[in-house]
Structure formats: structure tokens, C-alpha cells
Image (tube, rainbow, N blue to C red):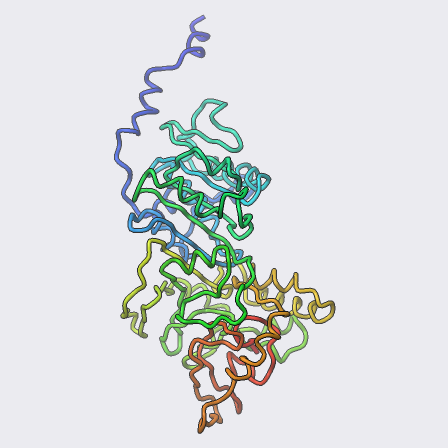
Length: 455
């Protein structure tokens, strides 16, 4: 009889323990430090490892911006396999549970993906992370696929883009993942970012909206010319949000000369003269646009750990000293490209690119090439049909100023911020006995939209 009574009625001691955390102040620590301390990443077969910031160091600054009141939103643009969902979405959830409890809405691209995220990612992460697991409510009805309630009363909701999800609810934090796969217009009410950010306005400066995705929308203006070094081409979706923000780009210091440069598509070289895609991908490496020094794939992790985010308007010298007036915005926006992605090798990037180009040459289909450019290289796509409209402008951009001479042994020629298709590019570099852009001759017609095709 006594055991039945203890099972039927709640304990005042347990209730006191559950609500005691409400009287505690939030733990004032950077988001990345909290995730490293409290989140464990499930690896399968019941194994898990602590989240390691040194593997994806470019995620640390965007994560820490999520707790800064000077920003209303954080926007992260990057290719697949960068660890952005693990650090920014799952990590922010753990931070919101353990360190600073508050309502959090996570929006996946579809209802099916929302269920998958809840069952396959979050459920395993909670089981592997003791600090998060012990804060889950013990009541069965409080822990279902789309709604999770915690002992302190905070709520985690996993939804999908619909006006019912974005209406009649207040959340201190909202996270939108794979944003460019959302519908452009949510049930005729507007874009997802505008609707989501309204859910946080009740909390004023404490509210935060996170958006992360790889680019998925095409360039809308084929005659666009870049006005600022970090400006993205005109597209809808996440790159439009990036342009609204302070426009941060990821820079590496050259291991040879110390100058900083963007690890972008235009710096990948060494593979265009090889016909076999596998052999060509194995020969790929980076070329420093300042000193033309060779950078191998084995140096990528070291350079990522030495990398920095620069805001539009900032400059940095070889000693790491920053100067300039940074662009100001209520949105902290970040954009990185495929060569810096931690979970994808340069050989994989180049092999996928070359095979997609071969398929386009055989069939005329751009679908595979578009997917590779968007998800692997982290760039918006310029359709081939649009390049014809730019042919005259491309030829004018390639013209050399009067009196310019070509270096015979590898002199550097400044290409400014203009690529051969209106894209931002690194400075041109002379290699061998002709002028080449990241290893590719300027006289060649590039098959790719971004910059001058790497050689």
C-alpha cells in the first residue's frame, strides 16, 4: 500500500529540486565553451565524444554571437559538411537547456526532416549528454517528437515552415536550419525569417534568431557588379540575409608569406591540366594569391585553427593587426566556402566538380553542377544560359590596361575584386610564362560561374 501511494503522488522534495533552477542566475559563459563542456556527440554503437571546437574553429565566433545582445540575428552561410548544424543548432539547444533556460523553436525544412532531427539527432544527443538528460521532464506526455518540456518549464519545439508554427507563440530563441530549402513565401504570409524574428520581439534585446544554410537560390541579376569586397551576389534566401548583416568572411594566414586570404574556389589549383577526375582531384592544392606559395591539404586543419573572421571594412596585416572601420548591423552574418570545410577534403570537392562538369558537357543538364556549386562549394549558382548575356562584359573585363607587361616568371597582377563572371575573386597571379587566375589562363572560357575557373 505504501509503495502504491509513493507512485501515485509527487514528492515535494522532487518538485523543489525541479523548480529550484528557476531561482539561479544563468551561467555567464560563452556559448562555445558551454557546448564543449556539456554536449557530447553520439558516434553510434552507444559511444559518444565531447564536442571539439578545434575541428571546426570557424563555428566558434558565430556560436558566441548567439548570446550577444547587440545582435538580433546570426546568419551563417556555408557548404555542407562544415559542422554548422551540430555546433549552431544542436549546440545552441544544449546551451538553452543547461546554461540559460528559455523557450526555443527549431524549424526544419519539412515535417519529415523535423521528425528525423528530433528522433535521430536530438534524442541521441540528450541521452549522451548527462546535463541535458537530467533536465528533461519525467512526465511521458512532456517528451514527444515535436515538443519537449524540461523540469524548469522551458519548452523546445521542433517544427517546419508553416504559418501555424510561426503564429501565436513567443519564443526567446528561434533557429531556422537549411533556410534556402524553405518555401520563399510561407502560406502567403511572407518569408520565414521575417515571420520567425517576430516571435522573439517580445524579449527585446534578449531575443535571438539564427539562420544557417548552404546557398540554394540562383543569382537574380546576371549583370551584377560587386561594390564591396565581402558583398554576395544578388539572390533571395540566406545570401540576401547575409548582405543585410555585417558580412564576415573567413581568412587564412599564408604559411609562406603570412598574408591573409580567403580560402575560396579561386585559390584551388593544380588539377585542370589532368583529364582523369580522380588523378586531377589528388593533385589539387591551394595557391596563395599574394606569394603564389603552395598549400597542401595536410595544412588545412592548422590553417583553420589560425583563421579569423573579418567584417566588411576591416583589413588585417601579416602580423594579425586589424584596421579599418567595420560595417555595423544588427545581424551578425558569416560566409565561408568549401575549401575550409572540415569534413570534406579538397580531393572530394574537385572530383565532384569535374564529374559534374563532364555530365553537363555530355547531357546539357545543370542540376548536378548546381548541386555541387551550392552544397559542396558553398556558392550561389549562375545558370549557363545567363552567361551568354555577360559575354561582352567578360571580354571587356579581361582587357589589359595600356602598357601592361606580362611577367615571365610568376609576377603578381592585381585583379581587384572582380572575377570573370562578375564574382569576387582573389588577385590574379602570374605562374610560368603566362598570366593565370588561380592557375587557369585568362584566355580560357571557364565552365563555372564563380570567378575565373581554377586551373
